[in-house]
Image (tube, rainbow, N blue to C red; front, top):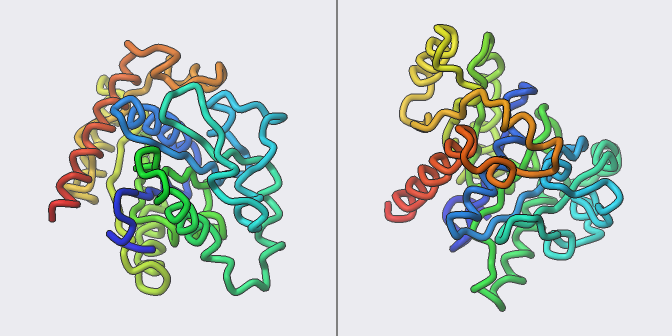
Length: 274
């Protein structure tokens, strides 16, 4: 399942091996904004820390079936998906069981394809009810280039890269691009960089403005016009188990994620028309 082959569904891996850049925050709030715009969204929490699950209000004792069960073929994505507080948004939660996945699948030749195959099965299941089918799957990747991230990129149509407007913003980005190109050449010929989103931007500082300029110079048109501002309300929301659109819909961060969702939908419209 690569490129345009999955009609009606777009699978996006949210990845950057550098930690603290806003991957999980972007997964939660972009998923919520897309759902608010009328899309049906599934977030796949592929990080053993399970922060996307926590940020959407899924307590640890409510994660009966997780991405670990999906990756080990003990469950399907559809069985593991649970509703969130946001209409149109579901999540497959994660927990620390994922830490052991690398050793468990060590000698399994199918290990890079576990998530791709699970998504393929989901597409087959949803053909019976196209009106309730997901239109977006967002995969929240861990902050490393390990088997979990590899599975995400093999399963995805595209990668969305959050880049923090701080020192060393581009650190490791060339390695990430190299890995995407390698996976494209060997395991997923349709993989591409969906776009780059600048996060934690503070327009008052010269540093943020300079980093934004450098990232735009490096990635060109791949960088979204929308920048996610450094915003206290966005930082507070996960501790309340809510996306920013539910926690404070009028905040600058909430409005930014709505604009980002609109940009992504428009890019997808142009992509499908090409």
